[in-house]
Every structure is written in C-alpha cells, then in structure tokens.
Length: 413
Ligand code: PMP
Image (cartoon, rainbow, N blue to C red):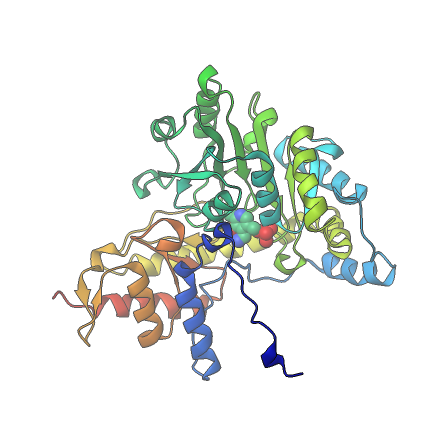
C-alpha cells in the first residue's frame, strides 16, 4: 500500500513549548553556519560560552578509565556517593558552605538542575525575579515551569550589580524565587560581599521571608583578583538558597553535561523526583571524570587558565575602548564583555540600510565583516552585544578591530 493512502500526521506543539524563545539568536547562528558551509571564513570564536582550554589531564584519564572499568551503568538518582562527597568537600573548602551528601543532586549540566528546581518549586501565578542582563535561558525555563518572569534592571553605571532599591521594588508576596547569577553571564559582574549581605538583609524582612534564592555560581572559579562569595555562606541563607554549580566552565567540561544543585533536602527531593523521570541520573562516565576534576586537578592549573583569561579580558577591553562612543564596564569574573553600542543605532550602512538595533548591527557585522557576535536582545540588554573572550588573542584582535571598523563606517542618515 502506498504511504499516500494513510492520513497525514496532525499535531499542534504545546503552547508552553511554542512560547520558548529561539528567535533572538537563531538568525545569527543559522546565518553563521550557512556562511561557513559555503566555505566563507567567519570569526565566530567570540560567539560561544565555551572555555578555550582543554579539560584537565586527570579528567581525560578518568574518562577512559571509567569506560574500561565498566562504570557504564545507571548510578544513584542523586549521583554517585563518591562524586557527591567530592562536591561536599569542595563546597566546604572553597566556599565555606557545609552541605551533606543528601543536600546535593548531580544532574546533566547546571542547566538541567536549574530547570528541575524551577519546575519543582513554581506554579502558575508565581513570579521569578531575574536581574537583566540575564543568562538567556532563565526566562524560558521560568515559562516552562508555568511561572512568570519579572525582569529587574541593572545598570552599567553600577557595574551591572543589582541594587537593593531595585530589588525591593521587584520583590513582593507573589515572588517565589530570586535568581542571582554570580559571576554573571553575560555581564561578567561579580556581586561583592557587602551587596550580598544587603540582599540577605532585605530577604530577612518578614514580608519577604517566603522568597528563595537560586544562586547560579557556575562561573565562581573564574574571578579576577576579587573573592567570590556564595549566597548560601551568608548568615541564615543556606536554608533559602539553591546553589547551582557545575563542571562546564572551570574544568572546560561542557560536553560532559555535568552540574549540580546544592539545597535543603526537601528541595533536593522535589527536584530529583523530576530528574527520575527525565534522565534517571547524570552520565556515569562523566560523574567519574567529575571526581577527578574536583580531587585531582592541581590548583595552579585552574589559576593559570584564570590568569590567561584575565589577560584576554584586558586586551579585549583595551581594544573596545578605542572604538568611539562604545562603553563597557570592567567585569571581574566569567569570560564575557557586554559593550553598549547603542550610540550607533539610527545610522546607515554604505548600502543605505538602517541599523536600528543590536541584532541589525550583528547581522551587518556578520555579512560584511565576517564576525559573529551575539546581539544583546538575547540577554534582555538591547543596547549591547556580547563578546566571549575565551578565544585566542588573534581572534579577539580580529573581531574587535572589525567591530570598530563596522561601527565607524556607519553614517548618520
Ligand atoms: N548558567 C549560566 C549562567 C551559564 O552561562 C551556563 C552555560 N552557558 C549554564 C548555567 C549551564 O551550564 P551547563 O549546563 O553546561 O552546566
């Protein structure tokens, strides 16, 4: 029988999923890969949130060892005891936060832990306060959890650190979770201890005592001469904090898909119920490699990577500041810069095309100068573009020089 005689499959995508925003970055990413497949040389090195160093040798060894030793089966839902022990030891040593093994859930990346925690805790009508510029996934994850994102601004004049006054305005009886991304993707901002203490003080107010903090600390190991303070380390805050961390950034293990949530037991139990039905557990091989990352990586290896990233930040900032009317605070962590290019909006290209947004500027930069950057619209920061400087000095020089040439060639209409 010919397939033509069967009825066509008819389906509608769930409105929850249809609401997930992909459009903000898709144009740049799909056009970049189209150009590459045509054989055009595109500098896309400053586009991705991926460290530019390999995983530590002990991690690579442990990966092969895990497969050879037959560590290839499902593990406990929360993760192997060995890895959770290593995580607890790390958290007390590096962050001063004493977590027990049942207060840690290992997941397939920090992102999965954020999703599971959010879905486990939120219901329709709940608000989740997200300081902007934000990690692009937060509002979509909040939407998938059925809750409502409340976007709260931060400003380059405050180095993009959230202020207590603005937080006070955003938090109310409907707020379920406040997200703090510290250090922040995409701004690189590190929230100083004093500001964290002020935020904790605000949350101690009886009318705000119902609010939990999701502290995304996935970049905590990457700061430049300033200490990173965990929100859970503050007085009374461990009970109200969901700490997100992982192996993607400090150990460059993005493809291992390994992260974790550290939180009070009832939250771990709720999130892990969801994990049980999503993935059963994180990859056994990755978990074995994660133990090596935490216990067998020499401190000076990470320190060397951080120092190299700091030199790249300085180079990128120096080049950016040579572009007239472009401004960018000096971030103290992660590996991103978020320069404001909005002084150029409203100008025209040589072909007469109006550049009215960061996205339009990025598309023009890609087509005419073969450099891919992510437009700030993706992060709730439409005046900006995001650069990841985890790239070679040559790639940084090339991309920023061309950004400068591209902007300077724009003309007032
Ligand atoms: N949080 C932030 C702020 C991130 O930038 C990322 C990765 N880009 C993640 C979470 C998720 O990381 P992963 O799932 O690789 O652990």
